Length: 230
Figure 1 (tube, rainbow, N blue to C red):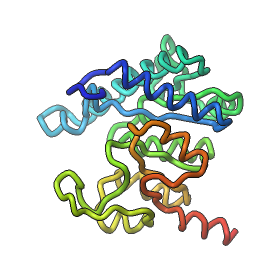
Figure 2: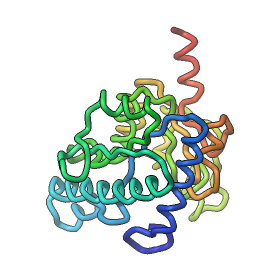
Figure 3: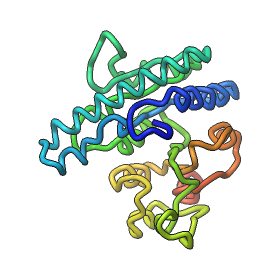
Figure 4: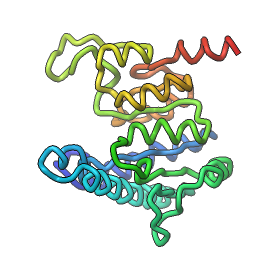
């Protein structure tokens, strides 16, 4: 939504499309899981009296709207893109099929996963972790408004400590609100590292793909040790 209070900001979408396009040009295979909080937040609606299941499904539909907006911007930037939805809607998106998604990635297409996991009570974070496992991703890159994981909210406490690296278990123990506990646990069980970085920084996605350490790496050492043990 950019600087708006809600909705879709065309300039922000175009910026993200350029960032992804530059990353794809390096030869990296990119899949995107997109949220819908700029349009509708299911959990917030549930706390205000709406049935949680209905609210979550509305949130999933909001992610598909964002996915279509990003697809349009990517194709305007000459990037081949496919949207796959966990909720079947044949007229506007492919149904999520793991093998098809992997094949698109092998052909150099960007795959945008919409509608979360297709199930209520699961966040977009969990959808990102799940899809990353299914397509054998090397890393999850969690784009946020801040430049990493802090001990406290850096807006409320300027003295909050920023972590360069942190283990999965410490994220859970300290209750750090970077991703929900289900997503962190899933990544921990499968030794998939997570890089948390500032999405608004120009070139940040490409820099991380090229090997530069930006933001905070969650579980990097844990994943490395697991590979060494194999």
